[in-house]
Length: 222
Image: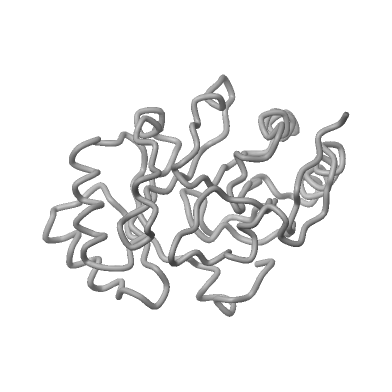
């Protein structure tokens, strides 16, 4: 039987974060997540039975080819947690074959090693900090698999989160790009900049979610 994917929504917008922030991308958002972060901004999509369409691989590839034909070079797989979708590896492979740059937004609690291969996707991977309530689920072995093409993202809601992010950076010395991102409305970006200066984090970037400044923070499909 052909695999079906639980597609919550798809749309073309700009990447709001990651190394290609500001570039147009096709977003494929899937339902279902193995975490329940306290500050999750897509809570409506974390349940496996959240509103969605059951779509085939061919249907997803049709959406992707149409976007590619409109000049879109990036596709972002997000959720929920996209790596939990059955046969997501097959989808990734076919999207790469189209010529799209495939980015996976993953929560740090799923093993990424099965997806490390030639011509692999890039990962924007979270490390969940104390305020999320999910730090105990982090698979730290993933950190060694990230390359310069990937991104490690620390979403921070407090100074305690910043301190913990610093500890992880010092302990694991990731070779990928490292971003600090504020939980919208919980911590001032200026406070985070001062922390970066104090800790001499010259290779770390502060990142604000662009889409939340362009559109209403609660708006979907952007």
